[in-house]
Amino acid sequence: MIQIILFFVAYVLFLPLSLLNYFFVENKKGYFLSSALNLDKFANREFRTLWNKVLKTDKGYKFGNIEETISSALGKNERDGTLTKSGKVLVWVLDKIDKNHCFKSIDITL
Image (tube, rainbow, N blue to C red; front, side, top):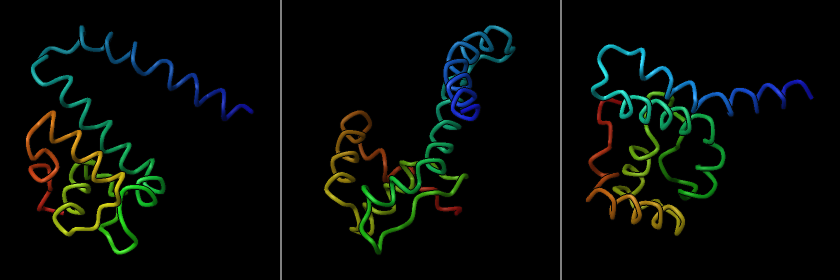
């Protein structure tokens, strides 16, 4: 039970602490983009089982690398033709926000 309580405390505190921290950071340029990328990488790792089940086919590129964003892994699966219907819908949504977002997000250094 204590683990669930700690999870919720951490989750509830994250957003207000992130906003409060912004006021203490000297170089504010890119603060929110940096935070978004860190959350994206964390979510790629934390939810890898879910992503691997619903966003790619069995032979697709695996989600879960802590150094990679979800969009990068989606882009690799898009490139390889291994997205599921759900994966294709997510890529479509992201591409509506930012043209070719997932393809541009592919991290070729991994």
